[in-house]
Amino acid sequence: MVEGLHRVVVTGLGAITPIGNTVEEYWDGLTAGRNGVAAITLFDASAHACRFAAEVKNFDPKGFLEPKESKRWDRFSKFGVIAAKEALVNAGLSITEANSSRIGVIIGSGVGGLLTMETQSHVLADKGPSRVSPFTVPMMIPNMATGLAAIALGAKGPSSAVATACAAGSNAIGDAFRLLQLGKADAMVCGGAEASITPLGVAGFASAKALSFRNEDPSTASRPFDAHRDGFVIGEGGGVLVLETLEYAKKRGAAIHAEIVGYGTTCDAHHITSPSPGGIGGAEAIQLALQDGQINSENVDYINAHGTSTPANDKNETSAIKSVFGNRANQIPVSSTKSMTGHLLGGSGGIEAVACVLSIKHGVIPPTINYSNPDPECDLDYVPNTAREKISKVVLSNSFGFGGHNVCLAFRQLI
Image 1 (cartoon, helix red, strand yellow):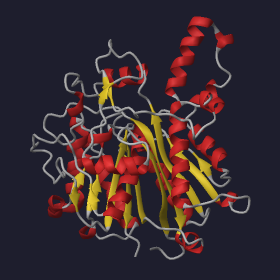
Image 2: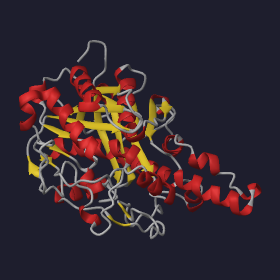
Image 3: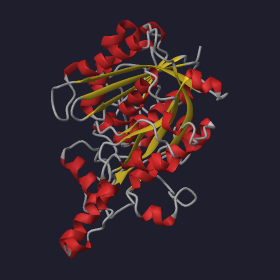
Image 4: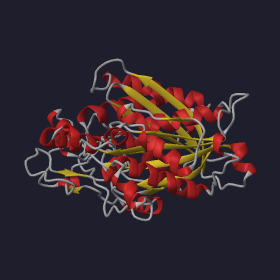
């Protein structure tokens, strides 16, 4: 711990995911190895090259949002706000006029309101500019999950949004961590949200050859680190943490789930979609997180991998981990929860941070499901197919995004 910086702890968790619409359901799904991938129902995908995704199931915003609000919010904002509300309740934190200026919100999104943009583009083309909704811009801009969460919660402190593609949720958590370390706030609501299972979103990623095309068996399509992986499965949802300075959490008698101690972030500066060879940028982010948290690499107990199920990412992430941990890399459990949830893009860092905290809390490591064909270039312990009981005191979460963004977050048991 650097002198003069505040220690930061996790006191609240919120999640809405393809395998569970609350934190409890999500964790049950992770430990059971539940598959969240199925045929697309949100639109008619019959003409698409990829016809499956990891959708949030049985989603009903009633009880969380007023009907009028719900019509004026994009789906990604609904996910972000609902997860934020759950996290705040879980933290037992009441935001009042007395503390509101010291509590902030940062929720990242890689794309923002893509569904709104598509829908209103059709309105413009079919019915003319006068029929475009006046709510189009506030529905589609990627900072609106943050803005709407701040309004819903009454949080008037530091507020921003991060749009670093698939690293956005983790960057949001890391940036919130920094603000708290520096004493710029007492508590932060932070994470990621995404809802890009739309005709344009699916078609765009398919055209880029980033998706799996395993239409005949979608339940096995997300298979990180497996030799037969052929692309990621697009998912949706949101994951949010409540972070507080240790002093503030103790003062109000909060239950503490874990401590966040490290944040490393780099850029490959290499290619718009492909990672740098050997995962050099990702390795540097991991090293920075370890240095930031003053963590000896020998003490890392589990790594929640970015693990997208794409040929390039999984190979390069494996190389990054091996370059940081050397001979010990084979002894560290590394799993990809995207095997179950699909890839939530900017929302992935949020739900994966939740998984890391719960792994520390419950002493269980979620598995990598659909792992059946070892790849010589991916030769670590990927916790294949079945959750593993293991006390983990130090856990890392990796997130990498288009544009070369790399993030690693470090969590540990409170000591």
